[in-house]
Length: 307
Image (cartoon, rainbow, N blue to C red; front, side):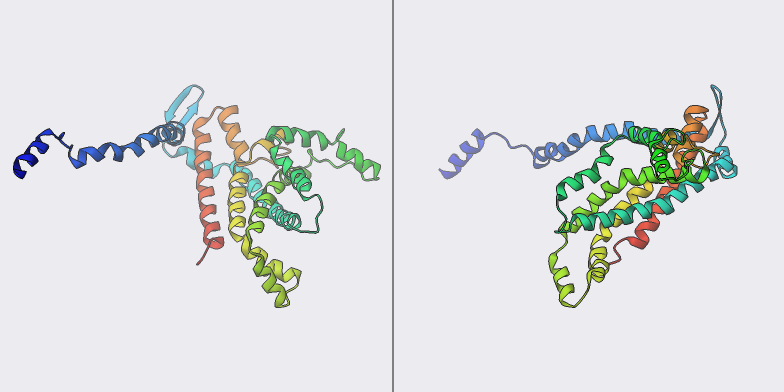
């Protein structure tokens, strides 16, 4: 009897699909959701990267492009303007970036002090330059530092200081560019450091104070080690941004005077969109990518977590 009942139940029940077929849709669902993002990444990232490398193998003569192999890269090595742009960018990287990060760390420590009044208002004031557009603040500094009618030279004149050739002298043009970059990015990096400082445990500071450490020793042995991960982050981001620097020198000095503020980003732009030599501009872009990759590896090697 039981056999007959079980036979009827089996006959009336719907057939279950195979386990593999039932789960195949669930397994492919994540890939379907990711597919639009992958397609956009391939169209707007991978394809331009690959096409740029292909372009770097061609020589552009007006509207004619001829295959040149590695000729653009050989030209790069022998190009004095490329080395000038690389040297100018390196000077900004070695001088301005450490100065900016040191100021940002000092500001972050000051912002976290309980003795500072109106902290929220002051933090906002230092962060606001980052909100200003790159071209807008470049024009602002070009007006302020104008050697003939700039507001800075006007104030210097009131103090009896002779006018400074901010944008017409090779040294002062570099200083003007560094001042503009420091003004724009210091507050942003200070906010990054401040977020890390607020996450540090107060127990470490209390223990250091009990051991007799003064303010400098607490900063050196507690604050700086605690800031190490975000210092590495800010350094890598600043390095990449500096090596790609374009807007500020383009608006402030257009690479002058005497190519003293010509950067790799500006030189790449000039070759690609002023001289329409897209093959050589692509070679510069790939050389820049290699330099950024090497510097990133070095920074992670020496400043990364060694534990």
